[in-house]
Image (cartoon, each protein chain N blue to C red):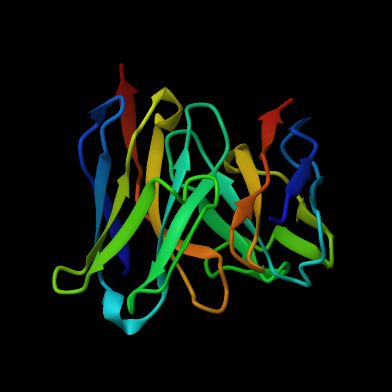
Length: 107
Length: 119
């Protein structure tokens, strides 16, 4: 199985800040990575697929990069609605695996 | 607009079988995509349970494989999850979702349903 490790586990930031979350795969997955945002009591929402492709309707302040084993999700200017938990997921092979999540909190 | 809706008992007795159904609207299951289940224990992360193609091809999480069955009913445009011999560790919010056959990211999700295993 491919293990996905996110860092940090939690981060505090202010509105307007730039935030970067990292995801590392235990083996190379090319660009087969997705990022999700989850708010309390809600289902995860797809933000990015193919490591850097923005899902339709997702604001352009979200961006993704990376390939192989190391990936990043960047939020260029935090908005109040961005405070949530973020998960990466490898989309390369079965079994599908997720990172443990990164909680983005208001400073 | 594609919509998925989970349904099933919110309380299951330990050692029994958990059964959930996901009704799909706005898209025909027979048209393609994999249809899957993901769960999230309270306060914890996401765990993929398994996925099934409309033709019957299935993939399961190895850690759950011996207890899981996913099936599709194309006539009702819905798919189902059965998880046998449940314990308290199976208490979670269960989500249904879909992903492409060549790209395994989940683009549409149900709202989720909490299933509590009671001893």
